[in-house]
Image (tube, rainbow, N blue to C red; front, top):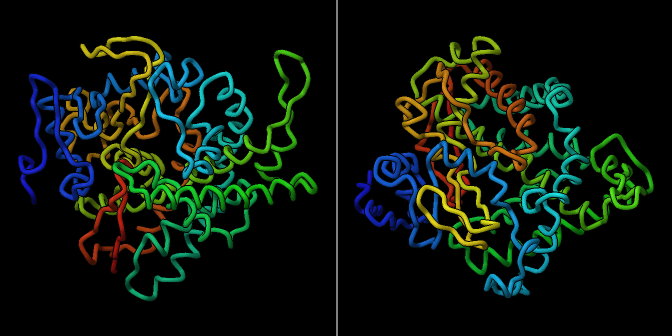
Length: 421
């Protein structure tokens, strides 16, 4: 194991930190870095990222809800005023696909779009999917159980979340592999130190993804179905200004569909792999961890706490503000490390240990406030359904080769997870 001092440099006095986010010694095991930051400098300026970061549970939890911060800034100030560069032509398709994304907009647009799709994701509606999720998991295990080994991401984790969110939206199962390719290229835009090659791939994926969604929109306008896309197309929202009904524009439909598809599976794929790895490495008995629904829920929440699939969410300061002694100007961007907040020793006892019997604070892996992950009920249902099935069907499950973490920080997931039984 590479010593922390070889790649992490903390100056507590100035609260300056130097750390290469693409260093495997960091992203392969970020929790030990977060522990060092909690000890020496929980609020810090990351030199390479040129931004202030917050890791403390109370600060992250509060900032996620603080309306002095937002996911966009150009609704309150111009690029010229803030000194921001003009949009780059080579990512025009990506920018267009993101323009109306639920993740990137603020009220009142956010409220209008989120209200439209929120009903489909509330727990009582999502719960109806449990038998379908269970059946899919069982059938996938049927396909590799006799082999005595499998690479779990490609045979199981990749398939379940993308299949379920695609079915909800109204996309055929056979599109699953293509959706995964588009999504993996698309989220490359969120990686640290992304390259021009990453940007070009993301822009191409955004264009192809958008074109495909537009063909679906045409079909559902002509022939509505019992799916979320038809609901979004044919449900009117009353305009508070005119009192007349308004439909979503095509651009809004495309952005919303893409963000639901990406957010509805990308993190859950990572989390299935992360959870299985943590459980197997813990030495605890899966039979005990999943002995009933209550134990299963505690186990799932603890895996979400200790190995969150998404580590960072960013916010713009919408006004001049001071947080933890840091003076921020309107237009400054800050980052909140959700995964580090889940390891705050002031909130969680022995935070680096996997303890499913914890009765402490709620993890922040799905965020908080108005941008709390809309797909959280679906992700939790999938994890609570498929993990017990996997360990019940394969009670002798073990890790067959050292897991390798993907170089996709600030996401956190495995390149592959080779298992045997």
